[in-house]
Image (cartoon, rainbow, N blue to C red; front, side, top):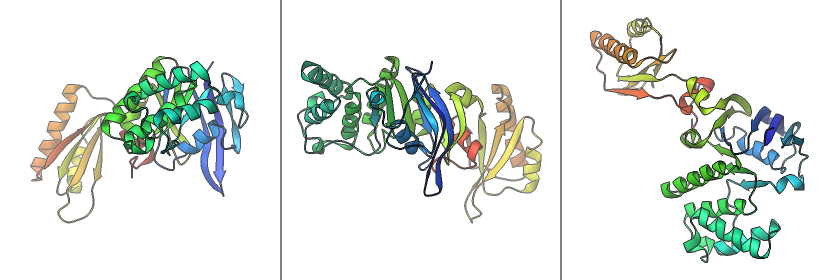
Amino acid sequence: MSLLEVRNLRKSYDGHVAVDGLSFEIEAGEIFGLLGPNGAGKTTTMLVIAGLLKPDAGDILFQGKSVPPGDRQFRRHLGVVPQNLAIYPDLTARENLDFFGRLYGLRGKRLRQRIADALDLAGLAPRADDAAGTFSGGMKRRLNFAVALLHEPSLLILDEPTVGVDPQSRAHLLNCVRELGAAGTGVIYASHYMEEVQAICHRAAIIDHGRLLACGPMSELLQQVTPGVSFRVPTVPDSVVDRLEHLPNVTVAVNGQELPGMDKAIRLAWKVPPSRDELRDVTRTALDVLTDHGITVSAIETQESNLEELFLRLTGHRLRD
């Protein structure tokens, strides 16, 4: 039985469809990535799951049982880290945690222990009695994260948790997420940073304009994208493209603006993953074709299989376009 199941979720605002028939499920201990550009429907989906928005259609199931919007019993199992900071800058880190812990119903020794644990996990124990307003952006994010963990939720929702943070805080937060998953917490990790999703998530869903484009284990998603190689050149005659298109197991794409002095990119993508020898041989042949036509290659770039390339293939545009 899944920890959480989202079934055919739909939500519109003033005639604009924000979520369009979204379905996915999450297991306990699984870090599930929700990947898409800003405006794709990630935040709306999470607000519906958290019971803060009522869906137009669809169902949310927790441990096999349907969850009505605003269900208090479900909220006891849920932790939410919003994209916008939800902490009080005039309170210390400890006071923030004490305040929110009491809202969760924690008291006495149990509350004090959970505050200490959350401060340690977030790496904020040395600054526990400093006002949150004096913290760096990354430290505020970590405090925001710690608040959501006080009541030990079995399901944690993270909405763009690393936006605007320094590399050290980003690494710390990602390690915390890994530890929570290993301890059995189910995590929904929503982000437009595909490298983070690829690094920490077991499975992921790619969405755009509220629709599910792909969903599955990370290894299976990456298998949908084959590696490629690009040649930076000043011009691309049709005769060159014709010759390159006759190379085995290869598709050819030309990218670049029609501006004086701007290089174009000829990208070769393999229809099926090539062997190392095939990749080397075809790259050499393509370079020979360009040289035969008197075309100077300013750079050769290789592209590994990644979620950015998958998103490009599914939508025709890059994630941050």
